[in-house]
Length: 304
Image (cartoon, rainbow, N blue to C red; front, side, top):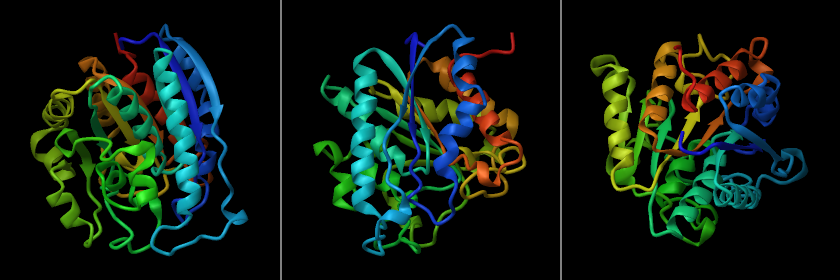
């Protein structure tokens, strides 16, 4: 990658879903020796620690359509500032979630940094889910099903307007890869948004290589850089059992590595996050170890 310094930022946010445990994801990934393994690739690594996050038990859930919204906005604002600080120092931020709602903070920080330079960013969203619900369509009111909608400019104002602008990313430079589980009321949002969504059927029919070539081209068109948002449920639960919302039929072990290797080859990635690692339901930290492997592929590890 063009940058030689990596900033590790933990975001142990778990207010966005009912299943507990993803708040321990950043620790699980660090326990899998993330920092030393990234350093082995030749990078200088600085760990910024974790952002402060409120505990669910300490606060009322608030409006049922978007639970814990105020606390989400506060945490994502802190995360956006920390990500922006890393970019200003010339570091490539690697954010460790937490549930996928942390992406609102990460993308806000990245998009604001490039916006101040007169540039936009592209977004590659590797995920089994679209995460494009709003409080009006969400069957649960859990915000981890809404972050991409907020990034694209619709949803709760507290998140949509974070950083003082909307949308964070042009939908024409936004790509979902690995989609296979979409709520019925969410489907119109995906179809009408202008986002390019590659489902698992697309991957089955066209192959992961062809899908990723197109995804990188779409996200990178006219962009100052690409942010990569990797939900570990992009991968099949056979390989990543410890995730917040596992869905069968995901990317294989090698497909997931190929996706990250091709993103690295493009030399367009300026930031990334890895989310939804849940050690409570994992097997001997296997999913966190896989997450570290994928981060390393995204940062340049090669077989030869």
